Every structure is written in structure tokens, then in C-alpha cells.
Image (cartoon, rainbow, N blue to C red; front, side, top):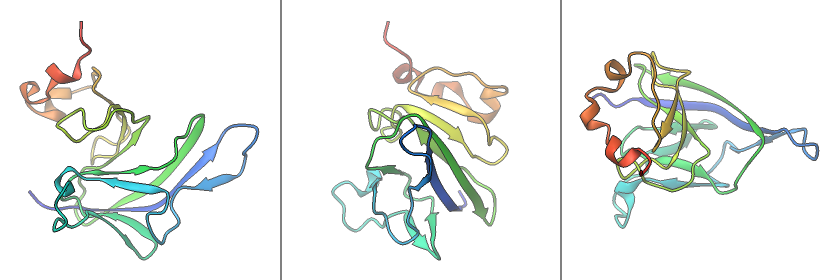
Length: 156
């Protein structure tokens, strides 16, 4: 599997409340202030390098090991704007929104909604730990038996 670098050029948050009408930057271009990294492979192992780095003022995902960066603050009633690009060959990435319970799918993804940025599927919304259907779902995701829907579906 080819490793893909993902560059997020700019991430910022625009609150839609009456109190705050100016954009609020979530990323300062220098470090991970306001964020924490959640990479299961790094749990208890200081030798595993972080897949997230800051390079030339951009947040870069090195793709492996897989994980997420999560804001330290909780937001609501917002508009999120993200600029991204793939450095080299297009790959897979997304923006996780409304995350709650961590590591519920594949022991990595939090319960959430993902705004998919995966090459050729950008614009899809995937509900994680919920059921969702999109056109050509099996072609996009592969064998349904490997989706872990047993865990993802709501209990009866």
C-alpha cells in the first residue's frame, strides 16, 4: 500500500453565533496548540512516530500509523472550512465532525460524521457507528462483511 501525504493548507472555524462573527483559526501554523493526537499505535509506545507534522505552516498527515487529530475545545453551531490537497498520488482522508465516543469503529474511529475527502469520493458524508448508504457503497468500501456493521449498528 502506497503511503500518501496529505497537506491541510488551512483549517479555520467560523462561529455562527451572535457573540462571535469573526473567523477563529483552529490551526496556528506552528504547532498542535489546541489539538491532541489520537493514534492507537502510539498508545504506550514512545518509539512510534506521530503521523502528523507541521511543515511550512501546513498540517501534514504522513498517513501511517493511522489516527486523528482532535480539537481540545468543543464547538457547536459552526461553519468549518478546510483546504486540502494530496501531495503526490491522491489518497484517502476526511474531516471527522461531531465526534463523541472514541475508537468505536475498528478500534480507531470515534462515533461521528465524516466529511469524506477520499479521492473520487470527496463530498460524501459517512456516519461512523451509524448506518449510512451511498451510491456504489460496496464498490467504494469493499466487502460488507468487513465493515464491522455488527458493532456499528444501533442495538435493538
